Length: 178
Image 1: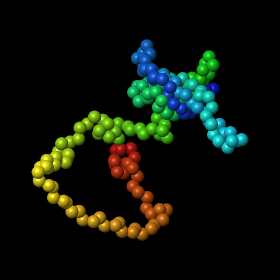
Image 2: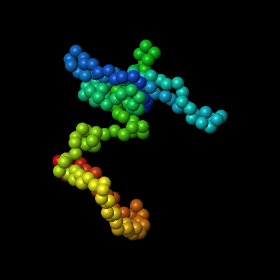
Image 3: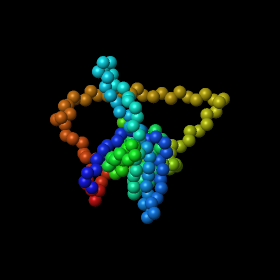
Image 4: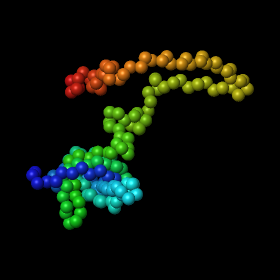
């Protein structure tokens, strides 16, 4: 649509994320983002936070389910969309919402560690349990070989070295995965 003001909002989720469905069954999520503007005080030579500005964000479609599942109170986010002022309140009809990686670590389905995903480690690959030590018998001391110092590598300028293989060459047959 023409005449819309597009904006990028960066702030912290305040409160809970509400998930509802329209009459046609389309998921819709609504949440508030507190954006805290920072201003520079020239007299003191310091940055300071101004009053927080609440922005009500609305997301429709499949993204709404993801937002409702991933976002909670106090999570820092970055949202883009159409900004409007309705009844003296800023509203953002968000097209994209993401976790701000400056404040959080985010995992996607493919990179979620097995422990966090709830998968138990494979017992075939788990180390064998160590036999119990008899308290009456002292355990023999294990002597370890000294670790050799790493050889000094020839210092090469990174600009002259060949670039590593692209990420998609490691995980697939090309950039499209086909």
